[in-house]
Image (cartoon, rainbow, N blue to C red; front, top):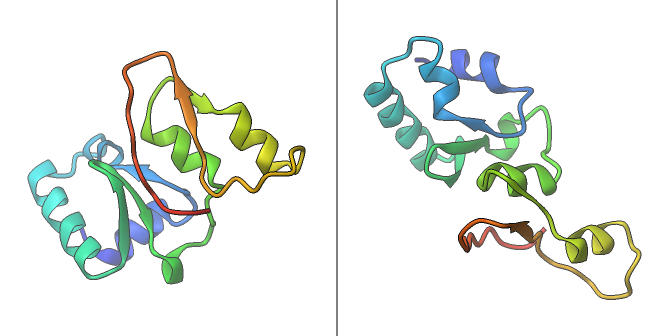
Length: 113
């Protein structure tokens, strides 16, 4: 896959998974290698294994912080503390988005929002 093809397919998506391309018949090992190269070149940002977003100059859509947070862990939702802080309903500053799930504990550090 060429960079221009990737941009045409995912430019409007805030985050995307490798499975998105595998469903279209792309060779999965070749695709993973190309995604790795684009990540090292600074064109993509890998959020976790198999989950990516476009780097700043290539994005058409800036993802809301809640979108990648929910995409990183299936069956999760944004915590009450994060939601209240986002909407300015509590006086404390909430620098990160916390997701909550009933499944096994899972910690990903993505920096401040």
